Image (cartoon, helix red, strand yellow):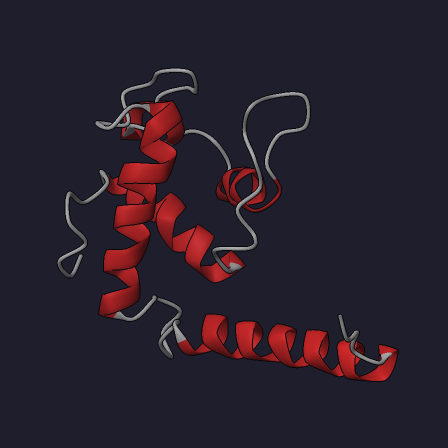
Length: 122
């Protein structure tokens, strides 16, 4: 089996990181909100992936509830940090591979306001 030379491997990794960064920054519109299609993707992510632990209605399960009453009093930065980095020693993983910090902040603000069902333009 042929191996990539170390330089080619490094270039490939850097290109992947660059493309991922470009995608993440392009998915957020000028006002800091994700574009509509990305909003829909984030809603699906929260409803399905986060919902597998926090309950499909976000009312709690293995993880705590993510309803407005449960998150409204928590600092936004703390919640964004939890989404991005997870919680060591718990089942909460970090999601930074899948969402950018501005997208995580959008998710938190949506949770505080009452999370949309389908991401249809909130």
